[in-house]
Amino acid sequence: MRTDLAVIGAGPAGLAAALAAAARGVRVTLVDAATQPGGQFYRQPAAGPAAARPEAPHHRWRTWERLRDGLAASAVRVLTEHHVWCVERTPEGFTVHALLGPEQEQPVEVHVRAVLLATGGYEQVLPFPGWTLPGVVTAGGAQAMLKGGLVVPGRRAVVAGTGPLLLPVATGLAAAGVEVAALVESAGPGRLARHAPALAAKLPEGAGHAAGLLRRRIPVRTRHTVVRAHGDDRLTGVTVAALDAGGRVRPGTERHLPCDTLAVGHGMLPHTDLAESLGCRLEGLTVAVDTGQRTDVPGVWAAGEATGIGGAALALAEGHIAGCSAAAHLYGTAPGPAPAALKARTKLKRSAAALDSAYAPPAHWPEQITDDTVVCRCEEVTAGAVREARDLGARDERTVKLLTRAGMGWCQGRMCGPAIAGLAGCAPAPAKRPFARPVPLGVLARQHPQEGLS
Image (cartoon, rainbow, N blue to C red; front, side, top):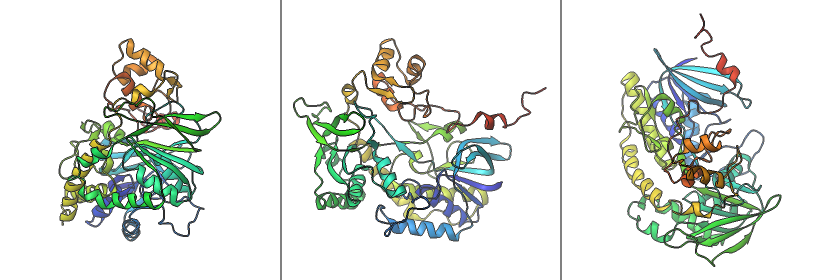
């Protein structure tokens, strides 16, 4: 299969990029692991479930309708259920390697002249005692159940952690009939107030969610955190406590909240595996791009959360700019990106930086983790084992992995990496994985079978 441009990821950034490039004459193939385009933000129900008001769990549904209808009317080739595990540079351009279908065993190759990475982000998970109990889910996981399965995770929920995602999760669950016992946010109002000028573009959206909380009488506990989840076979409640100005738990402020669901999240991290394997330069944990969303690898663009967590509106603007830039490179086609997209990108990047600063996890969260708390669920490594490795001299995630096996499991450290770094006292670092997802050995054996043979 050959085409001009492969856009990897069919969320807001990928959709905007594919439509912009296709409108300028580029042959575009849009590749995504899900059964339908939309990404996490516009996640669609799987075949079977139906809703009388499919827009109910979503925000900015009209924008999705424009993207969906534009995609249907375009010449973009859409490949769903294609799980990309590697992008290989070739003399002719690039080969996108994917695994097809839910079993992820049938290999597919797409040969392209250029690649646009719109791989999105994933949730940062910080452990605490009891976090492995059934009934504890990530905030994004609860939202995905609601949007993709039209189901709710339980009857009485606590939504906790930090970040703007908690607001739509709490109001979405309440609108679906879940009793939301509390929204527990570790950040204080003062941190948001300090960034008010930069957050002006986000005020209408935030005000709408705040009105939803008031309308549904959801208690909000700011500068609080979950210190423990309780239960034997499943979750029965959580203990929350207040935080002092330094981010430490204030003794004597603990309070028990009965619930059967805890939706917890501490922000997002960018998906950079494909960019790293291509050799793209990173700035911290994000893919570095120029004003045209070009990476430093010729023929590779990136847009959306991979270049910095900023939300759907920023992803749409960056995707449009990247699609226009890729089209200009491939065919020299005009017009360039819409001025509104350039202006929106500048404004929304300021807002994203302000939100990132305002919603940082509590500075001393590792102190709340008891030694018997499992940190790496794949390999069942406890916090005590990680601390023991730190005391032996491990000062980075890789050394901790070598000493404890933490991060060697199915997720390859995607879920436990931030926790390992926090307990080891180091900053999270890119993992430099060779593949973006697990690959059957049979598939690898069929890649370039003649190489190494005499």
